[in-house]
Length: 279
Ligand SMILES: C[S@@+](CC[C@H](N)C(=O)[O-])C[C@H]1O[C@@H](n2cnc3c(N)ncnc32)[C@H](O)[C@@H]1O
Image 1 (cartoon, rainbow, N blue to C red):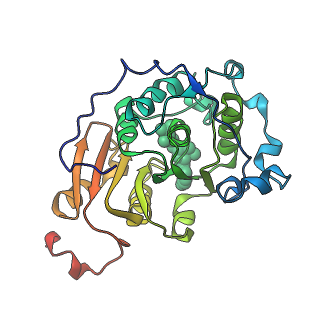
Image 2 (cartoon, rainbow, N blue to C red):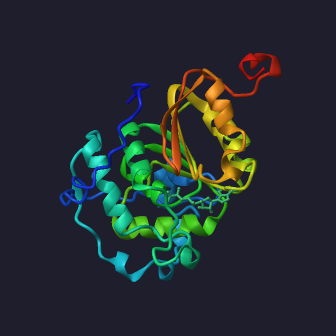
């Protein structure tokens, strides 16, 4: 799925959301490893008893309400309306990965239209990466993306996995990379990505570093989504750069998040002489 390059209609799908009450049971095929997830590479070995977070899940950390397994899902994830409909379902019953600090829901989240935008640009098999963990992680899993989640805290991963087990959500395509993103991202194999979601640390210059390393792996035509752009700590210098660099196209800008299309490929590392548009 490639963006048109035109301003995207971000009208959300609230009306369609919630229709999805039928379908196949998504299986959890394995648990998680301490760092790079076992499930991303070898669900069999995880099932066979290799040490995994799935073996030491603290189900008490999960809200009682999620013990009720929701109706299974049969509609195909290749259908964008199916992906959009799942947003409401997860928002109404989210993985409480951030605990009491995040209030009653136990999870910090972005705007519905941001998830909706990503639902339009992520389809089964899309190669995606996010910094931070939460509702978005659950959605990437449900949408069938080959997804990497870079998150600071192993505890969040444990809760996410508990939630997925309870909900019957297949997390076999998720890979968790645990640690501060500025440490983790430069060490990851720089495979090509279709979409990147920057929503980890919001202290300057973390978001810019996340963008630098993660969006540097986007293919030409790939999409970068950045959340919390209302914070100067997130955006200092960023809009000025995007406005001048023809290799980035801002296709959506809201008060809270932005969506960009990349018109180049390869790592973002370069000499200052390669940025004449800033002179
Ligand atoms: C706003 S929440 C993410 C919400 C999520 N994207 C969603 O839509 O539900 C921010 C996340 O970033 C994580 N985080 C904070 N600092 C980080 C860092 N330096 N590296 C990686 N993750 C970090 C937090 O633990 C938290 O999971």
